[in-house]
Image (cartoon, rainbow, N blue to C red; front, side):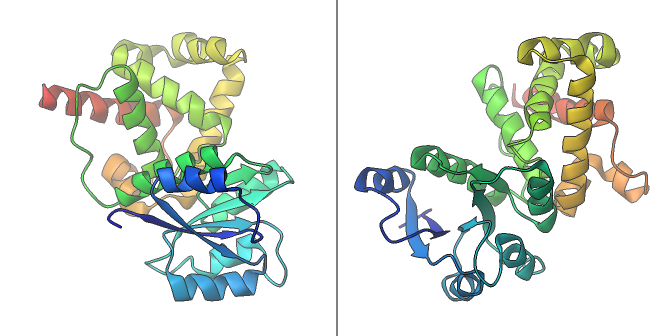
Length: 257
């Protein structure tokens, strides 16, 4: 089937009900099950060439992180999602550093997983290609475009900084001069929405940028932050990151009008 997403997932034979399988089918996702054995999973990935792999973190012989690393240098590697009943910021960071794209805490909703797989896969499919054509990027369409860009760059959606970055960029597109008052206006505005503090917003955004810089695609990063990479300046500051993304979005909106 055209545009079908082939999913390989480490689950038992009867893990999903008929209704749950329908959730995947409704997103045009073809599901193949694999045993919770890392070496077996590696063999199945090499044989089946799936688009997306959802792997249990702790498997026999080789864990999910080891599986991801086995394909890290391969150009046709699938998109990796890791699931676990154990939640840890350290483990999540290691998963993302190894090349994982998402972390799912079990038990998970099949409908939510299917929706996330579709969103992540579509974002990844745009890597190395020009930005999607602009539409009237206001309201929800702007939020969708910012989400796509953050996924392309490599900011994982499960961390707090992802949400803070998304809202900060949207605010800067809608109110450009707010970037000139990051600490006095931007951070406090985001903090108020999420009932947190400005300092926590700043730290979470900085962490999100660090994660993206460690695991992101160099070509994509270069397309947004070329002067930083080419000049060897290292990762951009929070305000530079937000300003450059919002500027590109505004330029795209202006050209489309």
